[in-house]
Amino acid sequence: MNDLGRVIDEHAKREQRSAADPKLGLGYGYPDGHRLELAQTKSDNKTNVCLSAMEFQKVVRRRRMVRHFTSEPVPMETINEILELAQRSPSAGFSQGCAYVVVADPEVKLKLAKLQGEEDYSAVGFHRWISEAPVAVVACVSEKLYHDRYNEPDKLDEEGKEIEWPTPYWYFDIGASSMVVLLGSVDAGLAAAFSGVFDVRGVKELLGIPEHFHPVGVISIGHGAQDVKSPSLKRGRRPFPDVVHYDRW
Image 1 (tube, helix red, strand yellow):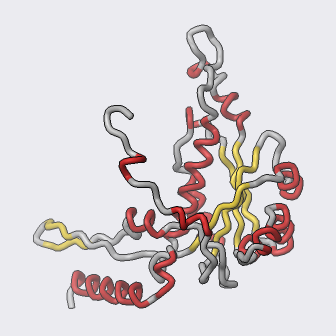
Image 2: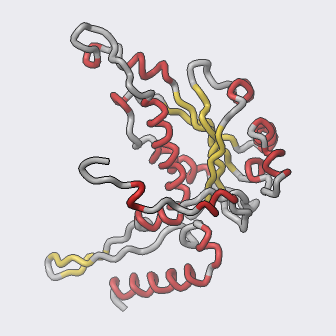
């Protein structure tokens, strides 16, 4: 069997495993987190086979908030790869005001889960998904770093002043960066869920977060298990024409 044949054979086997695995309907990605994407090009009478990560559309469609995890560990190397991708997210003026605290210590995770209101989630039927996930990634952003950047010479307005911010774009940036983490987790064959931080002071003190950084949320990452879906999903997705408008509203 030639190289192309072996790749196609492996592709078929992985697709079969994917179809047979009921977890895949819950947004977990392929068994090993990747599928084979085949592309043939003719060069010097040779067939080149390109392998890539899971198709982007499939990653997006498989992503959802998974609120239950197995005890299987996640290598820190994988978490670092996901966070390196997050550094590629948009950044106003390349201010790079986003930062993450990776929490893997079980005792610290328990304290973090308490601050995140895990007891309240458990009381209404959800799993203790914040403390049980192997890794919790706390997403933070610094408004100060944006003001610092936009006080640099190339960003001042015609009067030599900082621009008027029509929107606090630091929150846009940390949202975009966090979405990369969520999608990167699916692409790595993992599951993830986001929970907002309400006890900002408590989280900052627990994790030693600098005063000018604001913890926005906690992204729990691990190997997904059958969970309790949010009742909010019953609302359904808004019709496409209600969301997208052309040329004008």
